[in-house]
Image (cartoon, rainbow, N blue to C red; front, side, top):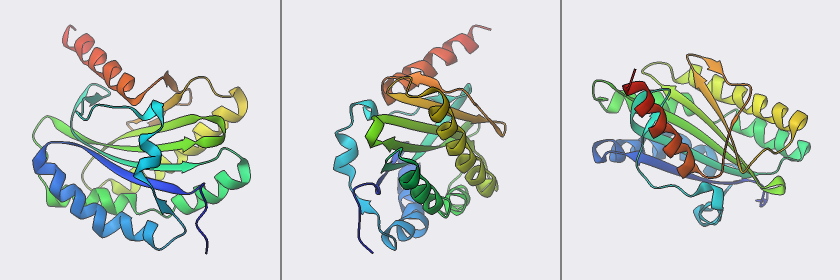
Length: 205
């Protein structure tokens, strides 16, 4: 099989040091073999050049929950339906559930905090980043995996119907519900600033 420029990937993790090492170990045990055994190109530099992916590395919150760490997978592909369908079918098989379950078994998450899983897909031909965000919890890895994959279908359908509305379309999964209409942002850093604003508003209530 040959590697195509429409199947790039890299990983990311934001969070405290006590989570960083086990998160890396779990990634190496579960997700990396999936990509290494397929026709994917590991290319972190590619993603570093995308302006919309600018972000400082401190986690914040999702849905008002304090985030201890953010597990991130970046994939580069195209919106063209044939290419997207091929990549989507392959990404369905990613062991996201096993990755999250192993992480929760390796580390104790501080009380009052949670872990966010974030899928980031860059659609190069239309210069659009789709971000899917989900709150992960212990023993719910497979459910999160199923919801993330469904969220990508929701995101794709939205783009088909309404087109690109900004550099980033962000879909949240909260309580198992997927936001059908994305929030629009310019950068990942802007998402973080939005999260901080939500925390401040909640703290005033």
